[in-house]
Length: 442
Ligand SMILES: *Cc1c(COP(=O)(O)O)cnc(C)c1O
Image (tube, rainbow, N blue to C red; front, side):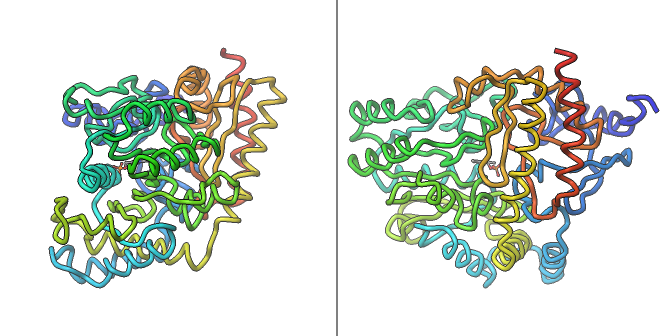
């Protein structure tokens, strides 16, 4: 079989899509732009595996870019979706399940007393920003280069994720007006945070950040940085917003606050608002923003900050999220995920060392990135100096051998509870060949 034949159907399906959908995809991260070439087209997934329409099988480390912590087509999640669908798809009226999901999230995530469900992480981040501005009656927002908060206009400044991969960290079509009140600083740059507050403090509504970054690859915060952000926001009356769309229910049951707390990196006082998505929908579209009740009571219809959604709290999406979170609460796979992830990352590191391949493996729980970089990656400036051509070579060498990684150096990879030592060891065996091949070629 030639290389071309192996992906024949994907090639044809993708070209057909390209004629009618811009770039052939409904979200740019899927287009393989960061590694060159064309995406495989997926037919189905089960557990830790996906299959493309040519029938090739892959161990999946994308997990729909984060939501599928239980793996593909988990029986409890599928059953919940089926059951909900039989009762009707949407009512535009309250259901009990929405409250149950809200209660479950508030129980798990520290400092979330009230919550509003929306349809995506983007919507949640956008609404949290609006709320912070409404609550403080101020306009400026601080964000950090390489952090991604969805495609919200005012936050599409030096955004991570596919904006970085495609080299358009600042999108056309975003007016200078909509970013005029956005201050973009470098992650882990404590002095810059203090300086920005010294200069603009009384006009800053809030600071939004990924408490553990996943969208320039995995980058951890320093203790000083998070503490400074909390101190300065408190001192000047600005809100601190944790964007936990990726880390919520991923790195720990209590999200980044719990995970960082164990590492001694989380300040004693938590964030004022938390933005969620991905896992809380279990593979269906759900986002949420929540926080202190006093702040959340500013949201309509009880407060003056408007935010709405025809399909928000959709019964099928909520059923999928609830089933996922209940399964996580019952099985608490986090220690298991930690062990598996450590096994994989230590294995990869050992292979790189043997090959004398400069690299950094950066990980938080079951999210990880193998950076082809000489330096530890602590911010966007360092991240973008990674050897992206080598990453592309690695990506294709893995794909050809049946391992599906995120198609960009600047995206986190994920391990699910459906993965086992068998999949990890098979991945390491493949990586041994793939990484050696990278060196030969570059
Ligand atoms: C994925 C992601 C978003 C955007 O969520 P969508 O559901 O894609 O709109 C926002 N913030 C972070 C940290 C994310 O990882």
